[in-house]
Amino acid sequence: MLRLVILFCLALPAHAAEPSRLTDAARHQIGVTTVYDSSYTPLAFPGGDLPRDRGVCTDVVVRALRDAWDIDLQLAVNRDMKAAFTEYPPLWGAHHPDRNIDHRRVANLQTLFARLGTALPLTTDPTPYLPGDIVTWSLPGNLSHIGIVSDRITADGTPLVLHNIGRGPQEEDILFAYPMTGHYRIGSDSVARLRELVR
Image 1: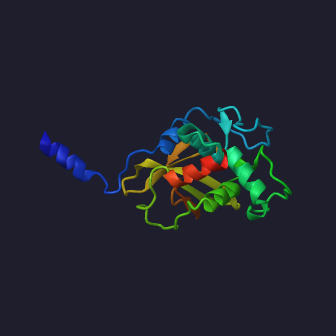
Image 2: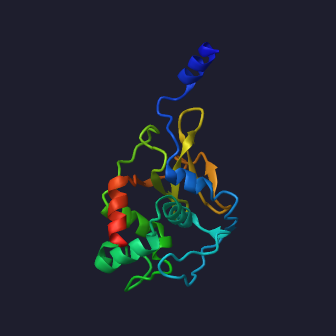
């Protein structure tokens, strides 16, 4: 029996890791959000959200941070945009922050995460992508996408990703399926900075 346990342990990939609070929170959204809804929707503020049965890729991240660490990205993005609006990409012709939609746009989340100092180098080596890391991509048609790295991996050691690309949150092998545009790690320091931002 001991020999079987040792053999099983040796068979585990060297970088296998425990699930993070973000991966757990994202995984709990599978089967809950079933409608892909990117429509502009007036939301409560702070803490606003669509009904949990609907959403887009950014909503997976927004909800995971709320559920895992009680961090409100709607409020965080709004506060940071008010303080540094010109640092955010002028992709939608907006002249001021919009608390209903800003946190639901990938480019704005990328900007916030980068300003918090969470950006990491991009690589095609799967090892640096840890459970709970946030990754962004450019999809065909120049569409932005975002997801959370899972603790589960493929046979070749590539982490799966928790994301919503149109069919509700799924856990899939898409880490290297599209050109990657960002890699971010929300650690204790950045959580503290986010909490300070929304205080």
